[in-house]
Amino acid sequence: MLRVGIVGLGYMGRMHYRCWSNVAGAEVTAACERNPKVLADAGKPVVGNVAGAADRVDLDRLKVFEDYEALLASGSVDALSITLPTFLHADATVKALEAGVHVLCEKPMALDVASCDRMVEAARRSGKVLQIGHCIRFWPEYVVARELIRSGEHGAVVAASFRRFSAMPSWGPDSWFADETRSGGQPLDLHIHDSDYIHHLFGMPEEVSSVADPGQGYIATQYRYPGGPAVVAESTWRMMPSFAFEMSFVIVLEKATILYDLTRTPAFRVLPAQGEPFTPSLPSGDGYSREIEHFARAVAGEPVEPIITPEQARETIRLVLAEKQSAREGRPVRLS
Image (cartoon, rainbow, N blue to C red; front, top):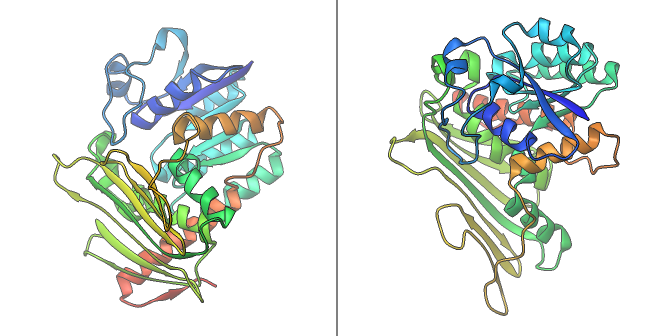
């Protein structure tokens, strides 16, 4: 039995709790949370931008720690889901790996590349599994879109555009999302989903050119790939509270267009040059459950495709930081 601990019981911790509860051969045995209000609200539903977080956490069935070092010293877990604010990711991950515990750390990996390097090196030294929670690489529609592209059935990608629109997150304790020194701001927390998927699809771009508002609550980026495709992505936290969360993409291939829009029915469609539009069959589950199942299999020693490596997650941080720099300085930034 894989004994799992969840560090941070906010919205994303609740999401991981729900997913782990459905993994055969695993059991959530411990939690670490030092905010008394979060603990007091463990029996109430939690709000986030995507449905699926557990309505309640049964703390009576868990060993609950307020002190993280005490959790690591207890020997009560084999693996951790680290669902803390971003500025705490690096130290919490390194400590867990050094204690001999496998780590699934939520995205973004860290606030800077140097911190990512510390995490990568700690995983290498420990021999334990480190996976960063880039759930979009596991999201069914995004998985199938990549498979369709890689098959070559519909020709090469000509252009692709991605959108991710939301109101400012209101579910973080102490409003840490709004503090760029703790969250990295909107580009590193929200926009990074599409930046990482673009990295996953096409590799690292040669150059990025971004525009943003002064606080970077909105950002739009052009990713330059010599010889194509033309790729852009935009995201914002500037929508009004009544706005429904939107994530969408349009991928134009030589012989088809692939569309995804969470707000439409059907949300996912392929429009071939010949024949009728259709919705491909999708793997079961959502990106969160699928990434956690993948992590559990890796921890168990099963051969799994390296869908997201720590080194790739580190490069995605480098990519988004280049986008922030480009917007701030009003010039393209080279990555190669």
